[in-house]
Image (tube, protein in one colour):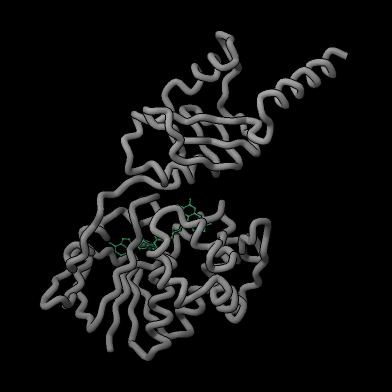
Length: 298
Ligand SMILES: Cc1cc2nc3c(=O)[nH]c(=O)nc-3n(C[C@H](O)[C@H](O)[C@H](O)COP(=O)(O)OP(=O)(O)OC[C@H]3O[C@@H](n4cnc5c(N)ncnc54)[C@H](O)[C@@H]3O)c2cc1C
């Protein structure tokens, strides 16, 4: 059976390797001149391969629609993925928070191993083949049309990524192609992104009762809570952890998580409330400040 995989990112590469292992004659079509361009920049160039949490904790940390991931996790668990890379000759290490990285700290080593596995499984990889369309008949893709030629698959796997970081290759055409196969696409929203905030600086000045503060950009805070408050002053979400100020708002882990929780809401009606000392009540905070001021004076 001739299987064509469209897209050489992690999803397409794994699909191609496993289809070939299953006995198919597999061709991978990639628009770039190499595979895994987005994978290369993951984890700040180190590639955070997976997280070795137990099943429940793993799902708890998927911000929206964790059920969607259940089937994939059942097919290959984090332990299974670590085993896969160990067996493929990629040494792995586990860091704080059970995050899993290649021992070398290089995403390029992950790509090298995946390239080798494609080769060893007999997958033919065609580079510089941008798929621009396909024809669908009776629920089956029967022609894949690239900028250069037409392919005739028995089966096709569409794995051409989402819309983020278009410079890596995935520019969003996948949604139109998936729609063509009968999939319904919900409106796209940014997720796990920094937030642009109006009046962030003014609010800080107001809270500190001063007219001018040093620029906040670059200031990073640890162990804080950030809450999303609605127009009726009701707290909708709260996250604890690290935050940093950017030139036009805020970023950092707590903000990235919150961005995914509010991305389908009317953000113009929301406020962010920061508690820089969430472990202290007002009295404790007062005592702490007086103590700190006292120490500074001496
Ligand atoms: C900055 C950043 C850091 C990240 N860090 C991590 C991390 O540490 N750990 C983690 O697990 N995830 C991380 N992610 C998320 C991760 O990169 C994605 O979830 C993953 O790359 C998705 O894989 P994919 O195969 O679905 O899509 P992509 O990786 O986007 O791959 C799609 C492939 O299809 C190709 N393609 C697109 N259109 C066509 C076309 N028309 N014809 C032919 N080929 C086409 C593209 O060139 C590309 O090679 C990060 C993402 C970003 C942006």
